[in-house]
Structures are given as structure tokens and as C-alpha cells.
Image 1 (cartoon, rainbow, N blue to C red):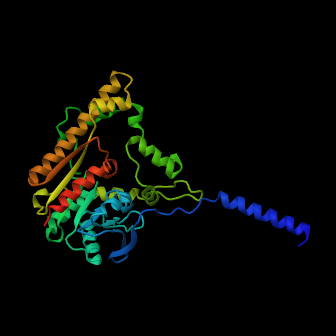
Image 2 (cartoon, rainbow, N blue to C red):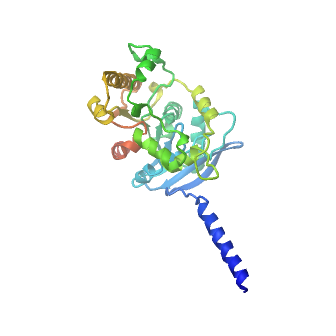
Image 3 (cartoon, rainbow, N blue to C red):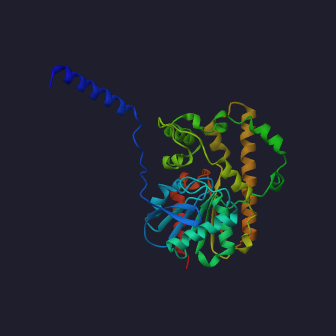
Length: 339
């Protein structure tokens, strides 16, 4: 090979190497699950994750998330149970049809997945709006399930401000909340650019969801950074299709885990209020949260007196992430007591 030709070849190789190094490497979901898709109606498929395991099947349902929000947690639960997760229609890799976002539709989707997988007498565990699926199924198809576990999700989405017995108006509440310490008011944003940076912002608020979940919720730009959140319309449709929980109609055993706020002293130690207004806002915020939680627990206990209620102080909204060991312990104890 001539010297000139060799020099050109080497330069081309070096140039290609530099370009390759600048291209974001492909990301792979590290969670140990199998992925399949189940058709629940014409043109609509749902993503189903299977983490394996033995023992009574547990099916994890999410709210405004995909089943990937359970990556990590599900692997731990799979040590004692066969664990599945269902991504509801409209999210992640599941189909995004124009219709079908009512509570009843969502419950029917779950039943069709159970039929397809031939899962018998599972325990259903739901977070956030996944709790509405539990309530609907527990009231309409109690013969299909062995038990229900509300993961900070035994809530009534139809309640309004006046239902909580608070002595301030919504507008007064919003004004008071403006005085919270800045760290308590901050929210993560896709403007944080990368999935890792977004998770870092989440961590400052309590816990970070798995990166696999973020990659399901947000599109990826060509440079590997976070893109848009495409499910705004779906989220609105789910909320519009909400219904009042009929706990009294549920015949299956119930375990309800509630994330409770830290003590005021713990919050003060963490956020270090700089003046009396900030401290007063923190006290107000905590009092409002406790009033809302008390209403949810009262309504559940009134409708289903036999429900087991467990309060985890200092837990995050994503209770199964912030208090993984506690949630696993409570779930396993509950499941072993079932017939």
C-alpha cells in the first residue's frame, strides 16, 4: 500500500472512531423480566412484564406510569412470588387508542391479560390510579382474585377540597404554599436534559423512578437526551374517566399501605426553614396532607371494615421505592395469610 493511501486510510479510521465515540451508546433495560404483548381488543395491545418467580402470582398495576416503574422492586418480590406487571393502554409500549380510558375499561383490560396468561387467583397490587383498577375489579370480579394491595392508592379521586374538612380555601392554600422552602417547591423537569440528571432531581424530592421508566414516559432525542412527554391526552382521559370507589362492594381481602409525611421536626431538619413564614407553610402543608390521608383511610375503613391499613411515616408517594423493605414485608405477610 502506498504511503499516501495508508495515511488517508488511517485518517479515515481515526475520524470514524471519533464520530462513533460521540454517538450515544444504546441503552438496555437491566431489569430481569420477559416482555410480551397481549391483545385486549381489536388494535389494542398491552405490554406485559414477567419477572418470573414461584408461588402465588402477583400482578402489579401502575397509574400514570408504565409497569417499568416496578423494575427493581419486582425483582425482589419475585423471590417469593411469580410477579407480572401490566402497562395500561396509552402508556409506554402499550397501544394508544382514542378511547377506553374509563375505570371499567381498564379493569376489563386487566381481566383479558389474566385470561391470556392463564393467571389464576392472583393478588393485584396497584399504585396511584392503579388503585382504581383494584377497586373496580374487587367489586365486579371478586371470584377472579385472591386479594388486593393498595400501594398508596386507596384514594377517592372524585373528592373536592371541601370534603377534607380544611379551614382554608383553595386560593388561601395556594398562597401559603408559596412560602415553602425552595427545595420543597422544586420539581424535576425534562429541562434537566439527561435521564440521569432528571433522576437526580427526583432524588432531591425523595426517590427516583428507574431509568427504564423515564425512557418509557419520555421520548429520546437523537443525542440521547430526554425529549417530550407524549401522554398528556391519555392522562387527562384517565382522570376524566375516574369514578367514586365502592369499597363496600369488595369481597376480597384488602391491604392498604399509606405514605404518611415525616414529623415536622424531621422536615425542619431537612429543609431548614429560614423564617417564620416558611415554617408556618411547612406546618400547613403537613396538616393538609394528614387531613387528606385521614379522609381516605376513614372512607376505606367505613366501606371495608376488614381492610388492613398500614401507615408508613416518612414514605414517598412512590411508597414501594422509598420503603421497599417495609412494603415487601407487609405484602408477603398479607399474601401468606390468604387462602
